Amino acid sequence: MPRRPTIADIAEKAGVSTATVDRVLNERRPVSQKAVRQVNEAAEKLNYFAKPLLKRRLAEFSPERAFAFVMLGQTPYLNSLAQALIDAVEARPDINGTAQALFVEEFQAKAIVDQLREAEENADAIGLVATIDHPVVADEIRRMRDASVPVISIQSTLTQAPTAGHVGAADRQAGRTAGWAMKRCVSKTGSVEILIDGLHVDGYHNLEMEDCESGFTSYLRQHAPNLRIAGTHSYQSDEEAFEITSQIIQERSGTVGYYIVGRGHDGAIRALRDNLSPGDLSVVCHDLTATTRSALMDGYVDIVIDTPIQRLADNAVNALCRIMKAPDEAPININIPFDIYTPENI
Image (tube, rainbow, N blue to C red; front, side, top):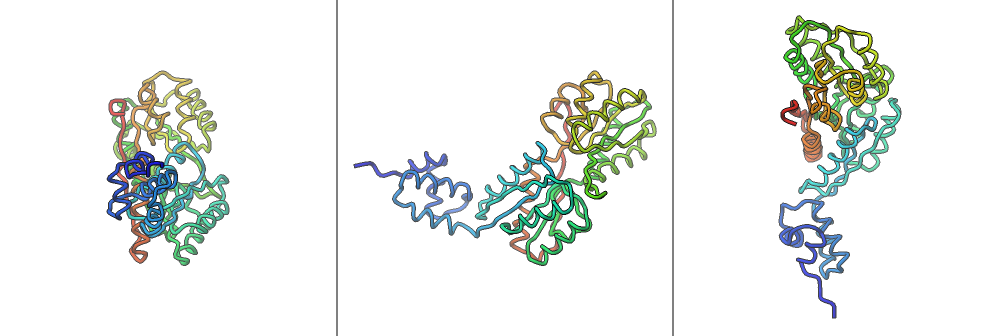
């Protein structure tokens, strides 16, 4: 007669400890929704005698909550953030949470609205990531608020929309910090070029980029008389960033520094590598990615200002959970501290 599966068998199959299995069986917290699901799946596979009890535990574990995250475009950074947001939902021990990421491929207000409506069909709460401050989007968020579906902005602020909150870095402060870094990296007199993500919808831009640029230029005007902003160059793809940066390098001999903001830094850094030697110019940019990390190590970038993805995701999910528990609470605004990386601390 086959041996009956034990708690130890369930734990081994589920990849968790026997203590976790015990907590699931006996409703002892803390235990995450992910762990409950793993134990339940292992019990099914092993035909564990108490699997009906485990199914009931899974159903009763906590109120079921569905989250959706609408991302404007697909980049390696946004893909990583989407996965971090989903992981943050599944890691919460106090909710029976599921999450999905929906990507807006067409940079049009209607496309953003369509994706929000698709998310609304199955979601209790929505995070809108790296979006555009457009009145049509604001009207849709207002309608969703009236339908009791809270929406928060993540990363990029929305000044026109009645969101339930915002989670992101203090972008103007990040821009001023970039200006501070540029001043300390460059002692001689010269010009600085700004390369900025020019993503827009019907002329409405991403406020995150605008606030970073504003903070950077204001700091240099106030504290760096030796540095002059020669130009602000917008791009909408890596290839366009590469072409613009290559052209600037070839045509402007007085440039002493670059400030790179937003998606597209891969193309700009590729142009620096193709046309310059390490240390020829001072470069400050945002987001610690594989590309910027490598550029830091090789001497093509001096400073990277980064908002850690997991920190951003955890705080965004925390905000959504708070809003669902207390929908009448005032809008929740959370500033995420950013990190500063140099070649010495990556």
